[in-house]
Image (cartoon, rainbow, N blue to C red; front, side):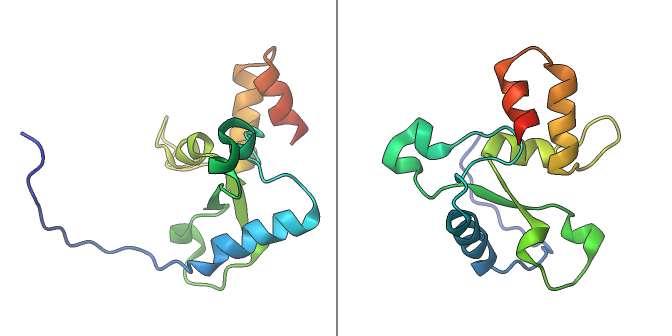
Length: 122
């Protein structure tokens, strides 16, 4: 059975909603394309105007590791939804990984594909 309404109480780490916007603006002002820093996926190239100015923004070091602190824009990475989920996915004893570690995993697992070549160019 699905669709029932449930009430949940949870603790979550506070995030500053302005940081995502500021990170995107910084990338755009630099003249670099707004694309995933792991696999180079570009939402606008794939989805046209729907994807313009869209990317997910990820803390390179999770807040549960860094603790309460002022986040700098260099502490954030622009990621596509797939790479963002893979950075957070628990697997083989790891509960998270950095974008750099994910790029290395892609290169090791798919060395002869165009996707691996774009991931290594990032």
